[in-house]
Structures are given as C-alpha cells and as structure tokens.
Length: 212
Image (cartoon, rainbow, N blue to C red; front, side, top):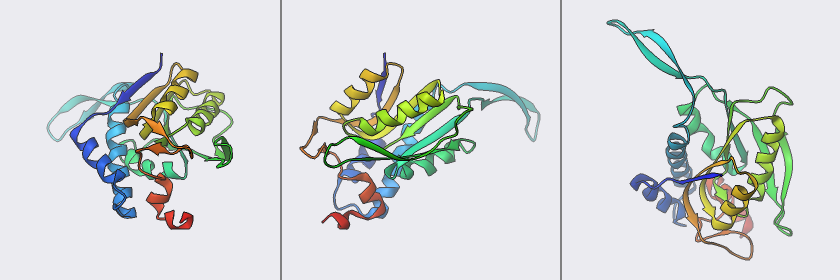
C-alpha cells in the first residue's frame, strides 16, 4: 500500500502560509519553497540506507555513517526546479535528471516534451520534485518514466496536493512514498488546487503577469 506522509510542523505551517499569500513576492515565494523543500526532504530521507565508516577526528578514530544509496532528484519542469538546490545542499552527491511535462489546458492531460534520463543504469532511489500535485497526471507520467528506467524506490515530494491527485497516484502506484506539506480538498474547473497557492511556476519565476 502506498505511503502518504503529511508533514505537520509549526515551521511547515508558517512557510506554507507565506506561499499561499498572494501578496508574497516572487523572491519570497522562492525562499519559502526552498525552506519547505528542505523540511520535506528531511522527512523523506529518514529511511535511506547507510554504511558504517571510520573517520579520524582531531582526537581519535570513531565510527560514523554515510549514505550508500545512489539518489536522483527528478524535478518536473519548470516549477520543480525551485526544489532542487535546497535538497542538493542536504544530498550533494545526488544526481539531477529533468523531466519536462506540461498540462494541456484543453484536456488537462500531461504532455511530456523533455526527458533527460539515461537509458540504463538506474539509481537506487528517485525523488520526484513537483510543488503541486493537482490531478496527478504529471506525477503519474514521471513515475511511469522512472519505473521504465528501472528505479526500485520512488518518492514524490509535493508542497501542496489535492485529494484527487493523492488518490490518483496512490491508486496507480501501491509502492509509492508521497510526502506533502498539505492536502487541499478541491480542484476548480481549470483543475487548479483550491485553496492552493496559484501557479507555483509562475509565482516562483515571476511570470504570472503573462497570463493576466
């Protein structure tokens, strides 16, 4: 059965409220997205495999640990790009692969226009990064691509999800691990999450005026 973890923490609630606020600037939105991504990643990486190693401190030799899993961060372009850097700060050796998927406004179906993933040699763990999980279409397309690559463990990190999106991805992928900051109840007629926070890509990259 799929695992859905809603990260409830005072700092998550604080920064998420700033993201929801339409008065928050693009710079403030990016900063909040980065902070929430760090908090999500902290929880999502608690089950990573480690190996024991010995290191020399200034005083003696001691036993420590290092992550042994090969990890890939897979942002869904373009909003997912805002989640990459803070997670790379935590996992500097992670690989970064990109998937370009957009939602057709007429059909609300995902369209993949870019895929930078090697044909072989899958990683041990892939973390799909997408701030918004609305219908679930883009996430499903991304997860299918990673499964075709042969990734054995896939985690999906989203700041906000709609209930319908959560149901869609967990129904299709029983082994998926989903980490979210909030699950909102509704989608409007344009398939935007309500109450949501608007278009995460437009708000992060200050391009929302193009749609006014």
